[in-house]
Length: 544
Ligand code: N01
Image (cartoon, rainbow, N blue to C red; front, side):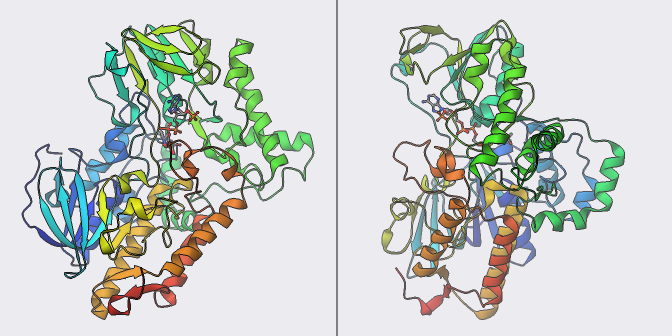
């Protein structure tokens, strides 16, 4: 991939796509294939989005490579050779670059340019988009493929400016980050922290892990992919992909339809062990009601808690690592390789910053409320993201009447199907709030959204329609459906990024649609079958 920022050869396009991650790349390929002029603007210097930026040691996908990949091209699917069950970040990035080359995407992507503003021109019926490089682009349609876990959440600690060490965030990891032999601290024990800690422990002289909330983590059971298994999957790919699209989670691993309460303890533990050995997210599907019934959930949680106690030598450290106060799965479950056992190493220390919170940074390290100073050369912030809305509202997006998306979503993001929001015609949010996105296999979610948007744009071309947006009523109704789907689970009980609890001041609204990807897909299909029910085209507009 060339690093040069390719100059904008045109400043008027049919579709402007923001972001060259896997959503933006597919949108570019698909829409160009349908005859639309498309330009992609990408702030990074290469394709891959999340997999371009998250270069921290140990970064690895927690969904299986054979499922977490494009399904739109049978040839690509057959040709690309995944090497491991869970792909590493370099492998994901190599895949992105292969796709970009194969489908000749780069000539249509401008790299190294961040979109800063996007204003809807009501008279012109188009979007006027500005960048940090001073470009101005006019587009009829604006597709925000900016990612739902891409706007970093970076705490500011008192005294930070005095700290003489280096501070890095896992979500934009500089490749020249030195670790070997240094005193390293990690703040955050979510998926990123849990992945990076064992790798930092291998290289650091001393590692302090500052934990505020312990999370449930399932062993990945990662392994190289056996050639016979690869052949079998490739032979059955169309059938497997369709099965995943129609499933609850976007995966072919089935949920056991029994209740955890309907079997005796021996059978229950046998099932849990079986799923534990399988590794990863499949554990939550041990029984049908693990994510819905408090008692079933408690039994699953207790099983995982015992695994943690068994992995950690020091009983006090083990108890600190045992999650408390939230149902298993209600915060996004983590998938790890050797995380808990890392705390058996003599140079690794778990610091409880729930008991003694971080009070700030000093010249030499990090200070906690019990007065202790933890000397550090490198502070790693594995502190997560302003999830599902951050990357959209960080752009100054202004719809009808100059209303910003941030203002519109001040009391909680409202969308219709996670795809569009009223008052912002011809604007699409790929895997936006209100879609299942983060609760499933992101590739399937992105492909479904891009295909859906592409069909809509073709429909508009055929109708001669100029603009499209949903009605306010449809949006309210969909927000209600999203809330009700969440209420049928235990998810809303936790303070998690699913509800925006990790970002100070963010309204508490459960953001993803928890009704299952199969059901969501059927709803989207039915909306189309009903003539794009509750979407308003052109002059019919009576909303906002
Ligand atoms: O972020 P997180 P993440 N002081 O929000 C802590 C995806 N992902 O980057 O919980 C002290 O989960 C915070 O503590 P608390 C995946 O969907 C996927 O790890 O607020 N601590 C928490 O422990 C994932 O869920 C992959 O008490 C502070 C941590 O930082 C999502 O991205 C890999 C703090 C943040 O955890 C986000 O994961 C990585 C403070 N001031 C990520 N501020 C894979 O595919 C924050 N924390 C494998």
